[in-house]
Figure 1 (spheres, rainbow, N blue to C red):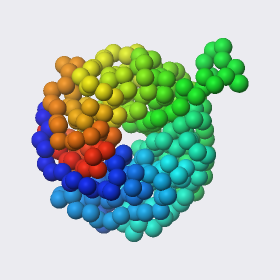
Figure 2: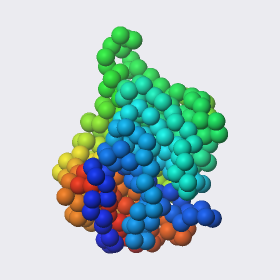
Figure 3: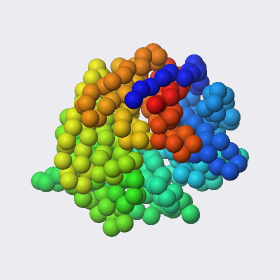
Figure 4: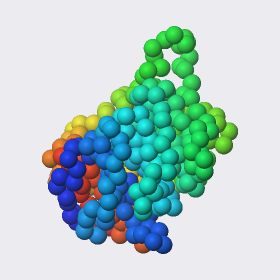
Length: 320
């Protein structure tokens, strides 16, 4: 397994780039890379040459998360202005605007079927689920208070939810919190299942293996990447190698590798079997907020990896 640098675009945005996602190809459009920036815009890029396809505006504060619907036809952006904007990828037209209280929108992801948008609820210590047919809030998955805590305790602020991810089946959902814990929910029953412990600092990113739905990967400010059996509630691998916070993790489409982005300005490729980093990319000059794989042409190997950074740039790599 290896990464090969493909191309980079300096100053892709006018400010730090904090988020990226891949919109799948449709019958009318090729697959596109979406990026969200503190410059308050979402940009859509052609990965063939990183040419700008269109720019989506409308937020009045920085964009901190972007998500693409599995159909490739719609996408969503979340901003520090407490709004989520849902828009048509091809026309750029706004489909819906979802409002949340301040500090309650941090990260989001569509479920595999595209029927629900999960939003990491920040200070609400919950994950909000929005129906994508009518764009209505249909469920709130709350992290239970720790034993012995009282409703008046400030301790639940430690459960500030930073990250969220769906299992490949769409039946389970995991979220990472400020206190280093990961909470797993049964979505159809709207039931909290269990916590996954092991991190000592905020969990900013989560990714399930596309091949083994039990395997959940996490990245944390404690500089570690963990692999859990999300159903068996066990931590079975911990990998270290970054010299600062791990801000983003993703699992390759073949399930054989993990990519990570860090405050140490690097992108690393990890071999889970070796429990070690096998490659380090150093083309960014500031912290790397997002890494995301895209499967090309339905193939397993031969994927693209995108990374985005505070240095305002986008980088693309081939994974083989």
